[in-house]
Length: 182
Image 1 (cartoon, rainbow, N blue to C red):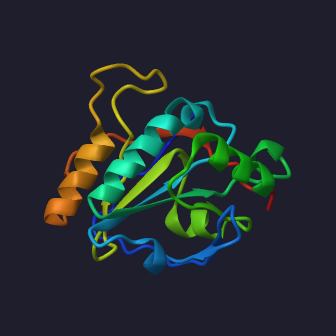
Image 2: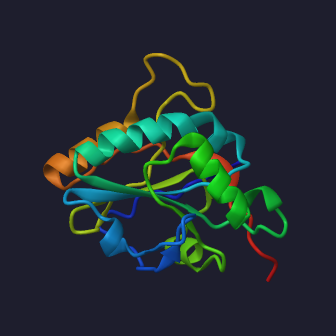
């Protein structure tokens, strides 16, 4: 188990150009919505991701309606974790009906530049692409339950409406990113 870092309010994301599972290339500018952007580092095999992926898909649709762009990035080493290969990413995205691009960070440069540590690791930006949220999805953990507080949703709504995220945030927990050998 690993934890995300704390939110470094105002941090400007390092831009990138990453391929999605359908052959397109994406940059931060192309991904951002008029009110902000949510980028989440995930993978296909992590039980924490598997437990929330369908809720994430539903949440992404709600966020898009608020003007928030959404993307997911897989940075795991596919040599050591074949379930996270580029081909498998496409299968995973189609199986779960991703309404957002699923990007492949094959050389792990984006994960390293961003300080991503776990899957899932959420990065919520305002319209100026200044970081405002690096918390968890909700307070339910791996077991979805009715009435769970939708912390990501609440934070991204606040960001869409005010440009600022909540000052108190609980870190996300999940599997560690599977780094390539040095």
